[in-house]
Each structure stands twice: as C-alpha cells, then as structure tokens.
Amino acid sequence: MVKVTEEKKKVAFQGEPGAYSEQALRKYFEREGVRVASIPCGSLESVIVEVEKGGASTGIIPVENSIGGSVDRSYKLISQGGVHVNGEVYLHVRHSLLAIDGTDMSEIDTVYSHPQALKQCREFLAELDVRTRATYDTAGSAKMVKEHQDGKVAAVASKFAGEKYELNVLMEDIQSATKNHTRFLLVSREPETEKTADRAYKTTITFELEGGAGSLYCCLAPFAEKDINLTMIQSRPTETGRWEYHFDLELEGHRKDKPVERAITELNQLVPEVRLLGSYPRGKIL
Image (tube, rainbow, N blue to C red):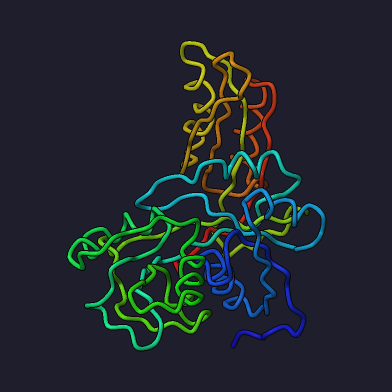
C-alpha cells in the first residue's frame, strides 16, 4: 500500500487547469503517494522560472508526442535553465468531445481545441461535419465552452478537463490513433543523486558540436563501444549563425554507472562542454 504524505508538493505546469500536463503530474505523484498543489503557468518558460525562483519544487515539461513528434524548445529551455531532470512520465492521451449540459451532438457546429488535438481527431471531426477552431490549449478550450454556455459549440480535451469545468462527455476516445502518448520530463532545482538498485535509469545530456566530416560519429562512438543504448538524439542550432549545433542525447543507464561515466568522459574530450541534465528512473505509461 502506498503511504500518502500530508504536505502538498508544488508542481508547475503549462496550460489551464485540466491540461494534459496537469493530468500527467497528478497521475505521476499520486502513484508515489504524494499530494500535489498544481500551479498553472502561461508558457513553458514560466514553468522553468517558477522552479528556478522556488515557487514550485518541481516542473513538468512535455518533450515528445508519439504522433506529433518533439515539442519545440523543451530541451533548450531545460538546458538553459537552472534546473535538473529528475523524472519522466508517459501519459496515454485520450481525447473526448466535451460540451455543456443539454447539448445534443447533432446540433454542434463548432469545435475548439489545440491544433495538435484537432489533427489527432480529424477523422471523427470530419464525420461529425463541424467547423474547427484552433486555440492555445485543450483545457483552455474546455474553459471557453463552459464560459460561452452555447449548446452549438464543443471542445476536444481530456475527460479530466471535463471534470474540471463540469462539462458533459459526449464521446470518449475520439482520437484516430489508439497509441497516442506524450512524454514529459520532471525538473527540479537540485539534481537527484540517489540511485535505487532495482530501478532502470535513463540519463539526459546536451553538448555543442562544430561541423566537420565524421564529427558526430566520433561523438557517438564511445556509447556504441560500451554497449550503451541511445533512446533519443536530436539537434538544434546554436543561434551563432556559424552552422554549429547543440545535440540533446538520452541514453539507458545512470551517470554513476561506470560505462556511462567513461563514455561521457570520452565525449567531453571531443567537444567544448558536455552538460549533464540529469539521471532519473525510466518512466511508465499512465
């Protein structure tokens, strides 16, 4: 049995109350028996700042969707902020059609949601034969429907958001792909140094690399030579205008594992600097 703590952990997320980020953080911490006070923020930058200044002990940042791909700027914000990655979680994204009480689905003419959510539900919405209106947030769309009190509009958001804004769920699981997952990273001001023997770990690093034939190959070779599996690699411009790039890299293992430690040491000899963003337990799909 999970023992529930009495004090509430302050966790910052981007979006309106009821956002998928809030749903993910609540599922993550409730599984650990931790009560949460969630803090909504207007942007991903604000989440990082809230953690940096101590307004929240933890922030949750979406980094990748199994259908939509990587979330722009997430790794950049984490690497430039004064935070460390201490956890990850995968949320099974299940979209619902939400409306005010008394709404008949046949009378709906407009559906609001975030562009990605509308795209992920395009087959259902095409069959429903409605106009779609892109908004800044799925939960924000649910909030708008609640405020408008119009039986001809609906929102695509989570059932969790529907409960937040007391909306009826007209239809569940309206997304086209059933295996729709978003991956989030949890960040804090201090790195998590404890390592539990019975848990599998991942490590996230970032480094800058100048152009040159075979340069990336040389940087990745130490990991291959030590049988370290890379789970993610992506590049982003350094903004110097000199065709130099930052590379964000995730790998299996903890930074204290000897093979990982040696591989990072060798990489450090090839590039100006390697930043260790954190080692954390491998996440589960919730």
